[in-house]
Length: 458
Image (tube, rainbow, N blue to C red):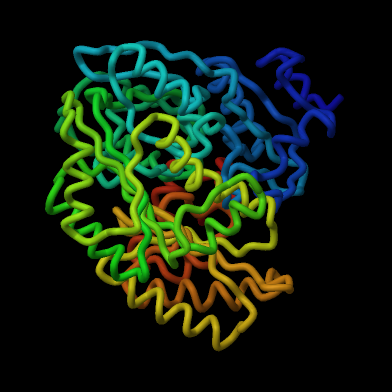
């Protein structure tokens, strides 16, 4: 056996160093089955001490490292390359919730704890952790941090960047950055933790974090609204914000083609409206507010939203949310879909959609658009597939149009899924040069050997 593998095995234990092809297979492929790697091995540390030892050894022997959480990345950000030289360091055994402090409204958890477990631990203390994703049963909090995950509740609570008080990380030289605390305020210099949120494991391995908790919602009101055009969705969003303020927690836009795709792969799905667009909204109140649902119904009637459904049970609510949550899985089953995770100023979305679709139809006529996302914060999953044809060979040309139009209207090419391997060339083209240069300088300062996820972002 390779002497390096012997040492790595001694650090985590033989059963926790995976070296055989059949054992590493699940760690060597991304969620979309797009990137296929061949790692040197997969290490499964159980605590930060083992992570430190692994990183120190890799640094000494110039072994590139790929941090991996739940492996739900859609951009290849947690997949090794095919060289056989990279060590995947998977955090799934680091799955302890260290503390939940109801008085301080904080929860401290290791990187391998799933998002669903975080939500449940908070709920057990009558508290609420608002990050919510379709993959919450398998994605891990370390990965959520590393991609600055957003999800359905960002309109009210923000992204992971807004939900983290402090974190703990192992730097590329093996040094432990330990900033875990329960403080809500700290003005002692730079907020260093922010460097690691959204860095996709390129600056170190997050091993734990202290998260913000909130009062638990006691009342909710959920509705699906059928709309004739995208401008009506913007008007609805504006009206809801004006009327309900911070009670508006979620606002999701869903195209008719998205729902049709779900029905194609989930045959028992019922599509409530035959309208071009649907808006899925949810209001929540931490107070017991029996009038909230009636207020929503009154608002819908006042604004002539006749194509609308307001849920009256937890089962009905779950049914509506399942329509939205099943879209990514339906896309995965459909295959050959070119995905874009973009965001624009909300006011620019209608113009962007028209300009982009006009340009795409001119170049590629036999296409359809699977559009959905968090309109409340301006982010849209702008996905394209061919009609009776495989459009994947045209991906680069399609991306040229989409990302060029996004840039023209002041948007971003990565709203919440990160850059990974998928968008490296586009980041280099569209990121502000001064910002990109500073990002690369920080990377070189912290990781001078470029050993930490070296094939991603930069």
